[in-house]
Length: 280
Image 1 (tube, rainbow, N blue to C red):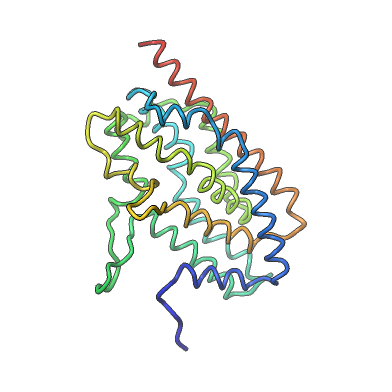
Image 2 (tube, rainbow, N blue to C red):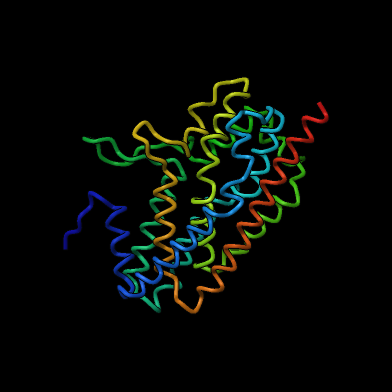
């Protein structure tokens, strides 16, 4: 048997979509579109910190705190969460079968590879290209060093209660395939407005050139694309495959709760910046 290999993301999305009844996919898609509207109407998606970043108001010291809090709350375990999501697809097999499970794993794996530093193979070459140094977490480690928080200082850094709460919530979703998929889709969607302004502010205040590092990953490429758009839609595909109508109300409440938790996290970042400026 031969399989098309040229468009792995599109192919795996199609198989994931076709793994459930068309009417259920239609209903689940409508429900996730409602969730998307909830995210984009939330105070998190429209938080004043975005405009503060755009005006480059955060200082270098503030940016050190921001990156340290983001590392503790989200980044340290984000790759773990993607790998865990691959594992929890095993819960789909009894309901949907083995092949839908493998299609979901394949799609998630594309995200894992990109998260870990693999890049599309240039035309005319075979095999993988990439390096662990291109992984998103490695790039964040280098950026933390550039803003004054090298790895050897992490053990003595006291994260905020808000960062602890976000971290606990992320890790607490590891046992539920659907909830974890919703969290990852939510992160990939809700923080898109932050990445460009955050990058601009960080690059502006950093004493060294970090424009090719972590803050080049989540912003627009030369062709106008953003990697998080693919990752966000991949995650929503995984959500739609796993969703059943009996969980709609639960998931809607869950997403609203995590959005408010993430918004309180960003409130804290703004407060920390104000504290830094008052102390200067």
